[in-house]
Image 1: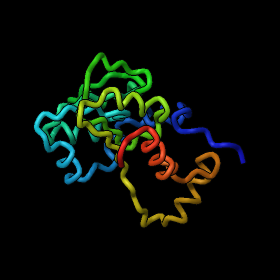
Image 2 (image 1 turned 30 degrees about the vertical axis):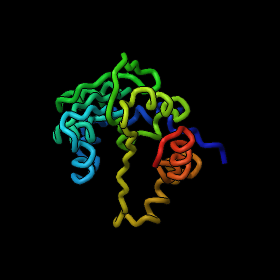
Image 3 (image 1 turned 60 degrees about the vertical axis):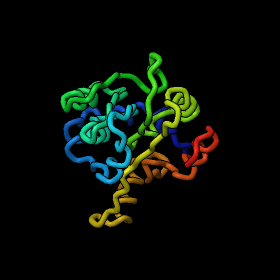
Image 4 (image 1 turned 135 degrees about the vertical axis):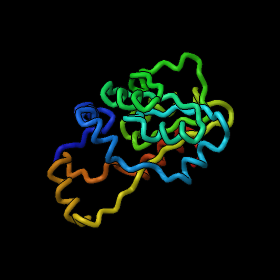
Length: 184
């Protein structure tokens, strides 16, 4: 078995979503309204949504009253987000220039695994306003049909190294966040 390429280095896979940006936007699950309301509870809260894709989380936060800026490397995905009224700067987070801006929240809606945590986490720390928070969100979908076993079998033929979990290790991510000085 060959070593698995970390997601943030697998640009071919990351860029594959843009070829189906409209379908992605139409079919990707939304975030629970309770979560969005909690995150955007303070009027005008400043949010940087990293790896925003088509702006699903960004839109929900903006609709709840947040002032949202999105960072997205794929121009096809960014175009869909802009079409929904989201301000997008096209760049990977690692290369993105903050221009001295600070944010109350830095969110990663199903996108943290696409950044290099060794570069991203220190950068997040520098752009958070005092009292700000790093927010990582994922939707966990439990399949009914096909069954979990059938879906695992399908995924093992598609993802190298028998990879079946897009997030690739919640414990590893938790450890990276704690090691970077963030509280869970």
